[in-house]
Image (cartoon, rainbow, N blue to C red; front, side):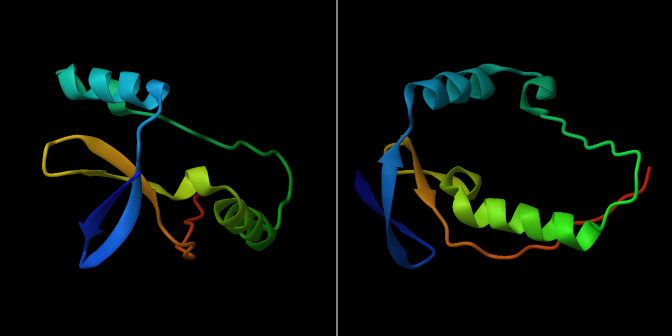
Length: 96
């Protein structure tokens, strides 16, 4: 663990896991943007209450810390991760 000052606050930051280090290595050395693209989709062929789905997603954000990870480099260029508090962001509904 290392304390790093971020936006005026000292936060506890943790080193990357082995899997995160491998991914960071690939991303930092790949000249193509395709490595960075992670696509997700949800296709439902029925009536669904989007507000209930939205609340379920917010609950997941709140429960699972991994969905609130952020990354920062220290003064030596090493990448660390830290958690941000839960905040509700708008989830956009798109009907394709």
